[in-house]
Length: 154
Image (cartoon, rainbow, N blue to C red):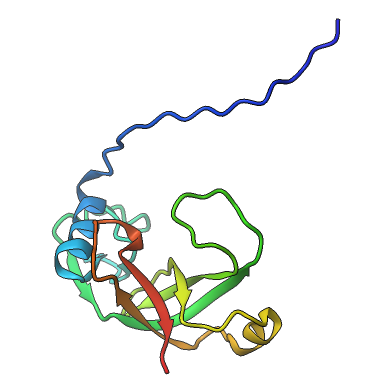
């Protein structure tokens, strides 16, 4: 017997407890416009996004917080030209990037703004790994990763 497929959409709204470490990171963004990371007392790595433990040394990082400078370097990027249905993403084209901030040992993803994307190939040729970047905090912050974006240093 043949079967048919019927299109459907399933949305299940829920709240997810993100834990003490991620909560502190987002609260610092929202309340203080500050990027916080955790620093391992054993190996000295500065982890952003912050972790509750160092996966190399297996030590707790609960009380090992450091504030990071709101500037750093572009580590990787891609220019998104196709529309995806991810909540919170801008309308294409946009640049998604990985950046290292301050003394961080790890990179964090963000959206790069302030770049003219009317000519994608020209924009792509102007972007280079290692370029200096700054963090720009939104005026209205809600305790979400979208509370800031990245811009190139002019």
